[in-house]
Every structure is written in structure tokens, then in C-alpha cells.
Image (tube, rainbow over all chains, first blue to last red; front, top):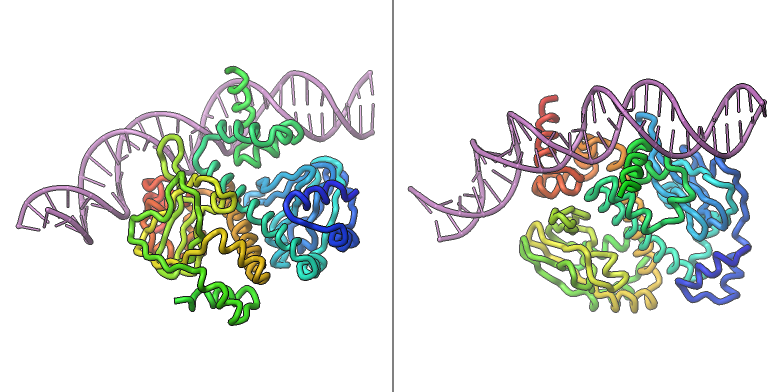
Length: 192
Length: 192
DNA sequence: TTTTCTTCTTAACATAGATCAAGTCTATTT
DNA sequence: AAATAGACTTGATCTATGTTAAGAAGAAAA
């Protein structure tokens, strides 16, 4: 049950078995059915979720009612509305299961306590935040500088499994284009 | 010389004078003239810079030779090519002074050592990375969901000083539009 | 099996913003 | 003072992507 997370932590920091055993009691296993919400806009995001199994998306809704996929998460990723989680203010995002999910939930207060008890854990989340920042900056850069077609190609290269698992609507939204456009892009790609 | 940084650190973490005095010897003051580069594409980013005075931009160059502003930094901000800095691989970004600058430079190795000596400093950079991640995610969200005009309006609201100080070309690039388009957006805004 | 969703595709038309090409107005250099 | 460069604007035209609308094919529900 904790194997995936343990391996993930240990790939980035030094963590003794005792330290890991201080963490596990704080982790709550949660099952979430496809289409169900993990959090909804307006709630305070109290927990971060580590994905043991399944796939989820976080998305915002703009003033025209359109959804925009902010993050896609599959096994071995964390997902949360970090803004809400860190500031403990109501969420502007919603998170929804795209497939049936098995999640490990970690509460805000517990995490703060663990930071003080286990310095390597704070290092882990520092690194995680840094990587997430870099990745988002690169995504922004790609969004500003390349065509829809190139963005799709890049996604295929970087995350081929996502392209296969996740419905086209959500991928299109993640790329910042309409499903219709993505469909045309695909058609174009098959030609050549 | 260290007042701005000290205040900044202390607004986010608890830090004793002794701890701060462990940090200062590692900070090197650097003056950078307008239009000069802090780092150029291809170099490894060895240091992060805290801006005491002035303004800088980091930017990428795409395969058509077009520049894209990734980050704008003024007083009280940090700037670096974080990807290069964290992975210690050659930079894909360049950083250039938009105005004459006074910077405090902190080396990668020194920072790693300081993390071990001063846990609050690691906390500071964890928080910094988290905020940067959130801000970039929101910027991406805005870029994907709103018109050039609305993005410009939002920038004026969030960072009015930047809009006044920084040349239009760079603001346009930061917003992901051409200078011509931004000029038209401005014209449109003055009308109403 | 029939009906109803989902997911994806296709086509015709509309538009925000890009591109290309000048031109103005200041500031800086010579 | 003249010349050059920098910062911004304006207009005409073009294009990638959005919008609207419809339909196909498979999956799920009834």
C-alpha cells in the first residue's frame, strides 16, 4: 500500500525506516470513483493526494463557464489545489477523478508537524515544488511560443501514457485548445 | 546592503541574527549595467540573484529566433534560470538587465551547505518555490483562458509598477503577444 | 435490443491576434 | 545640430484557432 510512495520518497531524499513509519500513520487511504470530485471550487483544500492508482484532473472554470485543465495526475504523482492548500483559503479549482482512483491523503496540519519532526521531508517537498515550478514554467513557455500541433507532439513525447489514457477533451483543454482543434491536429499528424 | 533581503527573509521565516550572519558572507554584491547579461544560454546557472535595485528579464529564444520573456524581476525578487540552477545543466534561458542593477549573488554549493546548517533557510526556499509554482500556474491559467486585453488589465492590477518601468516590447512578450497587439490593446483601453 | 451517453470527427464560417510595412516622436550619440 | 537608434503606433492583410452545428461509432444503460 505504501510501496510506491516509499520508493518515490527514497528516490529523492534519504529517509530511514523509522522516519517513514512516522509518516504512514498520517496517510489515509481513499478510494474515489470515476467522475467523482476530490475537491470542489469554494472548499478549502485540506489535503494533498498521492496517486497510488488511477488518474485525475484539476481544472478551473472561467467566467464564461469554460473549464480549463490545470493539472493531470496519474500514478506516482501528487495532486492538490496547492494555492488553497498552502494559504488555507477557498479553492478556485476543482479536482475530479478521470478513472477510479486509489489515493493516499495527507492533511495540511499533519504535514506541518511532520516538517518539524522530519527535515528530509521538508527537503522532499522543497524539491517537489521546485520541479513543479520548472515544469509549469516550461509548459507556459511552450504555450506562448509554439503552435497547437507542436504542443501536442511534445506532450506525446513527454507523456505518451497520458495521451493514451486520458480523453481528448481533457488533453485539448490541458493544451489550451478546443477538442475540435485537437481532432484536426491529430488528423493532420496521421497524414504525414 | 543586506537590509532588503533580511526583511524579506524575516517576513517568511524565523531567523536569528546569528543565522543571518552565517548567510551574509556567502552573498556577493554584483553591479550589472543595463543591457548586460547575467547569464547566457548554454552556461550553467551557478548562482541565484536577489535584486537589491534595478530590473531584469529572463527569456528563451525559440527555433524561429523569437524571444519570449519568462520572468520579470524588480527589487525584492529572486531571479535565476532555476532549471539550470537546480539540475546544474546548461541554461536554456538568458537573463538580461533592463535597468542598471545591484544584485546579491548566492552560489549553488553555498546554498546547499546553508540548507544543512540553517533549516529555516530551506523552509524559506520551499515556500518561495511553492509561491512561484502557484503564480506560474495562475499565469498559465490566465494565458489559456483570457484575451490579450484581459491579461494586460490583470498585469496592471497586480504589478502596476512593472507596467510603468518596463518597455512595452518586454511586457508584450511576457503576456505572450506582439508589441503591435499590445499597442492596440492600450489604444482600446484609453478610449473607454 | 433499443436507447442514451460518450468520445471523437468533420465542415463552414468567424475572429483575435500575427505579420508585414511604414511612420512618428524622443532620446542618445556623434 | 545632425544623425542614429530606441520605443511606440498605425494600417492592411493573413492565418491559426475558435465557434457553431451536425453526425458517426462505440460503450453503457435501460
